[in-house]
Amino acid sequence: MNYLALYSVKFGRSIPLLLLALSILQLVHINVLDLALIRSAVDRGEWWRLVSGQWVHSNAYHFFSNCLVLACLIYLDRRAVTRKMVEFISLSGLCGAAVYLFCPALDYYLGLSGVLHGYLLLVLLSIRQEKPLFVYVGIVVVLAKIALEQFDLYPRAATEELIGLRVAIEAHLAGVIAAGIIFSLEYLYFSYKRR
Image 1: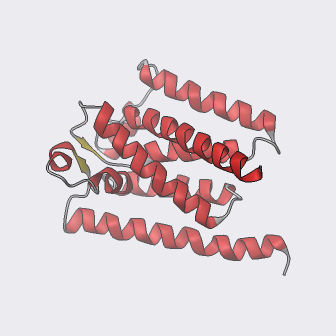
Image 2: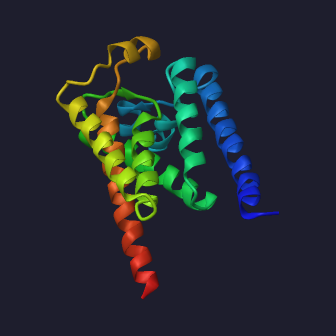
């Protein structure tokens, strides 16, 4: 069995398991308990909402579109499955914490898009030596989108209509900042390890 075939087998198991976990959480969110990041609930000590709020969605379109993007990003990420999962969970926690700490206007937040913006940045940075031009263009596009959103120049009315709530552009920025923190920590760790 060649390396690509072996990678496909390992990879093929990780996406369905993650999507299954997100589907189960979505069903719990809809039918049992609202798992969104609810500021007042976090204030009462429900800290797990900082992570679970990233993994649940407002409706089926919101859920399936984010899961499709996540599956594509995981597929493009050639790094080890363990590293992908650690980054995904770390991004979820950091993004949730940043939304909670620095976005007081967001009393109720849910969705994976902040984590997806950060994960895209991490995937791009992971291939910076193989495809530097592609990576630099990709990073400029991500940062330009974030900047346009922050200055309210990015059209989002159609997306808001589809997902049934305001697009939390603050979470997109939080995801990119969280990715920068994770990348910096990983870079320092691997630089130290190589010594």
